[in-house]
Amino acid sequence: MSPQLQTSPMTSIDAIQSLDFKAKSNGYIPKGLTLFAALLIIAILVILMGNIFVGGIGKINIEFLTHPPEDGMEAGGIFPAIFGTVFLVLIMVIAVVPVGVFTAIYLHEYTRRDSMITRLIRVAVNNLAGVPSIVFGLFGLGFFIGFVGGGIDKVFFESEGPVWGQPAIVWAALTLALLTLPVVIISTEEALRTIPAELKEASYALGATRLQTLRRVIIPQALPGILTGSILAVGRGAGEVAPIMFTGAAYYLPYLPSKLNDQFMELGYHIYVMATQSPDVEKTKPILYGTVLVLLLLTFLLNLVAILIRSRIRKRRSNV
Amino acid sequence: MQELKFKPKSKIREFLGEKFIAINAMAALIAILLIFIFIFKEAVPIFTDPEVRQEAGLDKMIFKQEFYEGRAPKFSWQPNSDVPKYSLYPLFLGTIKAALIAMLFAVPLGVGAAIYSSEFASQRMREIIKPVIEMLSAIPSVVLGFFALLVLATFLQNVFGLTFRLNALNAGIALGLAVIPIVFTIAEDAMTSVPRSLREAATALGANPWQVSLTMVFPAALPGIAAGVVLGFGRAIGETMIVLMASGNAAIISASFLDSARTFSATIAAELAEVVFGSAHYSVLFFIGTLLFIFTFVINLSGDVVLSRVKERIQGKTR
Image 1 (cartoon, helix red, strand yellow):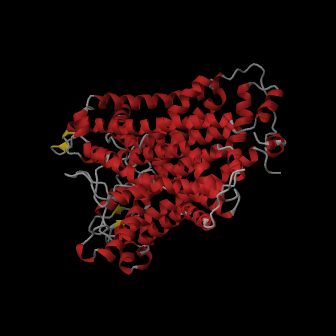
Image 2 (tube, one colour):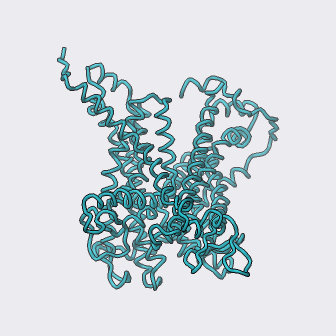
Image 3 (spheres, rainbow over the protein chains, first blue to last red):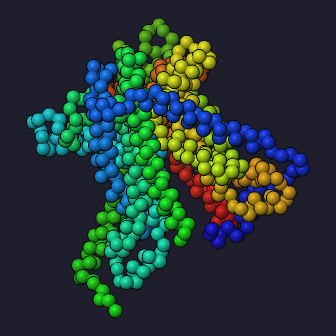
């Protein structure tokens, strides 16, 4: 607790009102109503999960996970979609983690908390987290494909038609990297805050420079937080559809993506197209449920791991 | 005494290292600027290109338009008809309708559960509620859209005896599921950060625990809770996949919650793939994107300002 708490907060809060407490009211109504709200949320989650689990569990087997779709999505598996999703988030993580970690380090180690630039960056990070995902999709199309990719084509591949200036896995991944940047920054910062100042001071006292302290003390100490942020970012990125639908995702491809400028299949996009554009919904329903369950299990697993690591960091913080 | 290894070049390295980190740190700032510039850039022909302006000028997007002689002017969004019509009004109505239903559903549940979790719940109950909320926020929106499309729509159709499965109510409820975690998290945080001394003061004045919560903690946390609601509204306006899959996507003008609705975000998602690069339709879609960006930017900025003020005020940092 900070010392400010002791300085009479009453003066600043307009809490002075007539206090008319009936002696015998026992508060069943507010307690009951709020409990009802909490229980309803839990019930909805249970129904949702139960429905998807029951609908999808029968479909999940090795064949489903390792085979490509057949007969216009009415048979076969979802391997290309899983492969595409993994490839996509891998590129995304490589792009987002260094930038996010350096941003957090800059905010926490290099600048004063109330300096102009820190404030500006913080506002930008918070706003980036609130930009609608479809706007990221538009940006990916206009900036990465049109401006960057189109620019590369103009300079290097003039005669060959679009090479980079077209939807591709690298553009989709970079778009997602922007979307998940706040996630990485925020969890790295949280980890940086738990590092005891004594460690840094000891490092400086031994004559280490700022950069050496960063490399030998701060980053190793913050590693679990960086890991948490990366995993949360992967969980978030793996489920987003709107940013990738114009920047590289394809409904069906006969081959797996192998180059950075290939298109790719993705679990979430696969779900969207199968659910909305399939000619025979009843026939594709089991596959659809199976795909949803795979995506849901994937994101939950990632989040669970992240939560476990985070709770270990918090424990360390409370021990300090 | 250990020898300190300072190489002469380390000063340059320090300098470059710091600059490298600083450049990385600008990424978020630059990203926000680039997003605005590059989305607005594609929308600019609406204001400058005479041909585009003829087809989809600002006036045609906002006011009623007379497209055929002899027929009453009206608002309509029909970008693919022979005479393309780009009135934003039906889309605006659809967006507000879906977001409003989402808020009506999510705010009572989110705030209610937050009050329960912060004020009344036992430790064990809290350990159930919080992971449940965290799981809810981890569900990809395409999965919520899928659930609304296949399960919730059928359920609502049977309950209300509806002709059309997909409508604003269906999309709004599913959207609410995405908003609940935002409202809950911020509201709960606002209430738990009310200082202990306030609670103790109320208790000393003879209030029961629940009276402390409702007459002291809740009012003190109200600005924070309001900020949570506003940020949740921002999410509801911008969310794409849920409304795209669950709302039916008909751009009609109707106040009824049981009619289909087409939102701004879903319009972009549904139409951008088929649009001709550089056409009026293309520019209009980017213009809608610009509107969404500006709207959520303002909402997030004001939400953040309120939250940081509340934090300072509640913790007594202002004089």
